[in-house]
Length: 270
Image 1 (cartoon, rainbow, N blue to C red):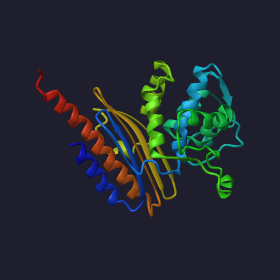
Image 2 (tube, rainbow, N blue to C red):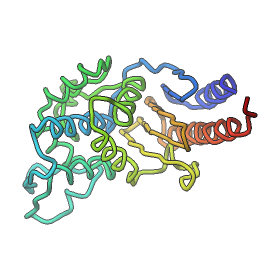
Image 3 (cartoon, one colour):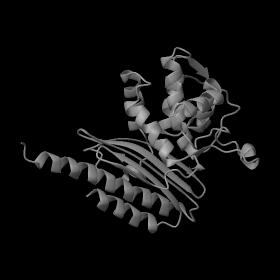
């Protein structure tokens, strides 16, 4: 069954017209296809920012209840809601983290980069031994992009981050629970979760997209089984092909978790 799963995923990848990397870790085994290739991170860079915010809160360097003024100037477009809200706005650090993840708010992300420090975020990536993850610019900073500065990651690096969110000893159970809850509130569900039975499984995910780029990563739980998955795609002619590829892979993993659990339940004792 394990080999069948990998074979089916390879078939899906072969039909995609983009460059695809997949990394999957299951309770029974793990595998990756090009998982150590570097990609423009797009909004997946927000996962390390999430981790650094909770690290600093846990260490007492900041408080999640600290208030942050959101100036009108400096707000950026793309994903999110802060760009459209009133001139006078104050939110907590935790509010910014939630907006950064569940609606991928770029203004919230940039304020967190300022608050936490890009060097601190990068140091966390180093501590977690992420091989390809680099934070070199803010979100929607096209001037930096024109100078060749971008944010990077890989599927395997993202799997490491997801595991830290879920089971990492670096964080208290309370903080891990908060991060998992935030990921579960994700509003962008057109990729990995789109064909899953979300009534049956827990799923917490974070997407990323740029022109020609479609990413998604997720923690999926069914009873006592967990899957960590990251799918990164670039060099796409159009985005729908990438979204469909990711959605197909998500359904395969969800079905595998449910079927694997059912088969274990049917095994005789003794």
